[in-house]
Amino acid sequence: MSRRPRGLRPDERELWQRIVASAQPLHPAHPSAARPSAAEPAAPHQVPQVDAPKNRPRPEVQDFRIGQSAPDLAFRMDLAPSVADRLAAAPVRMDHKAHRNMTRGRLEPEARIDLHGMTLAEAHPELIHFIVRSHAAGRRLVLVITGKGRRGPDSGPIPQRQGVLRHQVPHWLHLPPLGALVLQVAPAHLKHGGAGAYYVYLRRR
Image 1: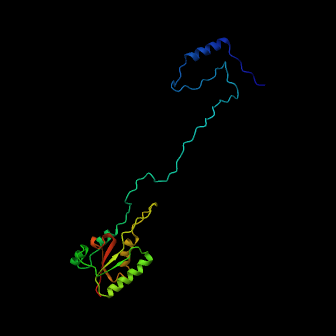
Image 2: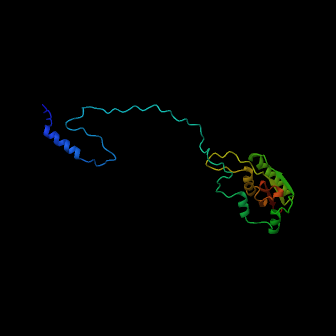
Image 3: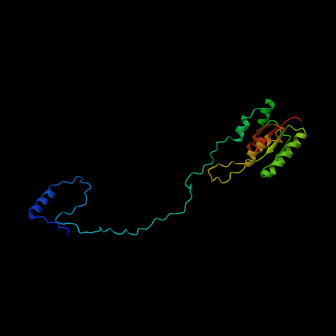
């Protein structure tokens, strides 16, 4: 059988009360929970009561779209050089004086084709037929109109180029079968369409 704990004698209880009254807490700002004295032991299996949380109204969350607060910038990040920069960096294969007069709009194109509004599948064969016929006719300077294009919705991480034909036509002019007929490609002067058209200088027959 377990022995029952002995209670405190009156002199022991008086001594304990003196010790408690003279003791100073180590953390006055954060007093710890009062410990029950030996004379008043805590009731066994006593569970502290916690107030039930009050039903607080939840804040209303309006519908939102990611990036709706970001400013709508007119430009997009594009690490690739523009078509005009690539053509300007290309070596001049034609006569330098004729090239200077051409880029300044002083030479009048002998023929022109308008690809504006066509799809890639429609524009490619039309461009091939036009360049081949112009070269067979002995023409030297022709104008290819592509249009500047419209900027579509750019909601993804990869920027989309503005004007598919404007970026694709210079590649077609340097690839077979047109690469053997074309001597020089340059952006047109403002009087001939500016950034929405190209000068195409053909080789001699």
